[in-house]
Image (cartoon, rainbow, N blue to C red):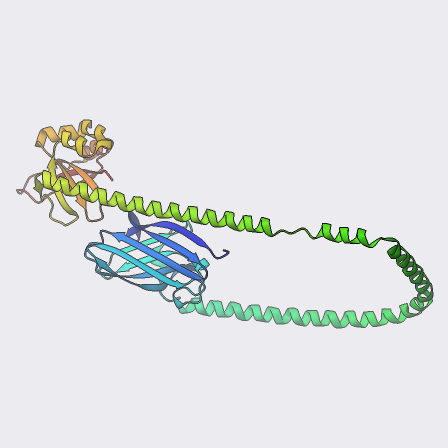
Length: 368
């Protein structure tokens, strides 16, 4: 049980080295020298294939150990990796040195997770350590070897010196020892005779009882401890599996809800880029029905002001799974200040209108 480990870590997408939004999770289990990794990432966009690396922090670098490759189907990655926990990915590093995962797509999207609670500086990611690091490491090893040799020489000198001193001391103490040996032999003889007499006095039955009292078996306690630990492991396994099932159920419910919205409301395409997979037009009352936990948002003064001016709101979903509500308006510095106070800090320009008009678009707020 000493090499047992089991946990779940959330995976985030990184854009230009900056941590963005939750994109999935990984489930890791280490047991009996085997490391099993399950990796799930959703909404991968145009990516079709990724490389998966284990991360090792060394000499200020993030060294990537290639664990395998994964195929993406329907914008979803779901792979399982099995490797030796003492030589992860065939490398010289055990799992204890692995501090996270780095996932690199062929189209440029990157994902990562770290379970050592340290920040990930992806600009330090490398698949091979620079030559100067190898040179520094070998130099340090050479210095250590020289230090060890020096210590051995010093120890040898000390041993020789101490041996010479002992020889001289033995010569001076030999005479004193010879004079004391006769007295010590007499004393030892007297002690031996007393021990023989005491041994004859102790009955055999008492000695048997004493021996039986010292031989107390511990097997039942050890069995109970093993059983208790196994029950704890089983409980943790059930908890992890339930958490994964809950995450998957939530994802499925969100997908079903979004599909019903697309079937029930008018679709619109207000933007030139492809950040939003789809958008629909709604009213404040619809928002309270669709997203019940945000029912107070339907009374937001800024949202109502934009709705009364343009007679619509938009509800959209991005490629990474976020739900966003947009309030129509034009961009102005003063308007930006007001929108931020009411929770609509982001402005996304719509398709270009007539020349000379102020930039029209939507003030956006993330629902989840």
